Length: 471
Image (cartoon, rainbow, N blue to C red; front, side):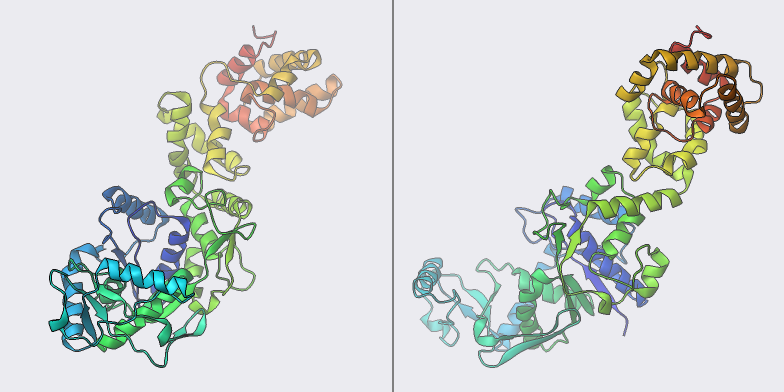
């Protein structure tokens, strides 16, 4: 059997983080099994479905690296096929016409509520002949659901789950206008697409019982179900925007790398021993449904930040330049020349060692490509305002101006000699130098920074910082 999984989002908004994890689990299970991962857009809600949302879903999956096999399937475009199946069930006696008016159904629900009963359709048209149908009422098609016994699912995550059939009513398959309902459409699409495993959030578990009844009515083999616990916030509450319930594109804008987000989402509810850093190759090799836990996972931005920092340090330098360049250009209000990009690539090892996101990386890299006077952070301005620091900066500037060897090692050696001559500490020389060259009191190793900036630019920055020897 070839494993076939699917991801089936509704295009009524962005690809949220929970949906992204569901897509990842389906993608990994298919890749692990040598199978296929399909994408279906469940766009039957025409009032809420938008092309912009479809584009956001496709873009989010592509950015995450979760590429699907074959063409994207539109559920709405298959509505005639869904109606055909409903009519086939009716012809076989597995479904029937119901002529209840909306007013009748409302009255039924109100009466059941008043009696403290569950609100379910009572099957009043289940065995009545069409000859008794009231004039002018277009019927719906309802499933003739079993009333005795139980519907039992062997769920690969939840274990055996069951429900008494008398707790399920005869659900609508086709509305009065002939349009199919979600329950019918999902089953027909999964069957026709050859889906073997349905991996989705456990908020769909109750739907699975009803869908299993449709499979049985049609004589189709149901897929293997695996219902994943939902994601909660770090405080255990239902995931909301304050916890991280954002669109995938928001995580890209917040500075996360797709490989880091894949690794983090993988560990939200799935585990392989104590492993935390899991490469794509390992994930594909190790992933299985048995590794999914039954408890809700907790989203933690601090853990994601740390994991993203790891992947930043592993990332290709030129790739990171490409990622942060648009952000830097927006900061500077000007494009980056090829020389500036080359400088960033050379500086990247020192920059990425301290960053956790590409947003932090861009902010830390700004001083390298800034032109004109630097905007000083408050602490850096305070350092340069101290009389002693300004005196030491003058000494540093004079010594640097006389240097011919502009390698970091030579600059550091010259500063050590100067510190011994004064006497003062190397840090007392390096701190005003850092403030003048970077506009901050925190940076990559300052002698490496000076080398990368080049002698002319470094001296120009010292001059702009007011070093007397250079003014």
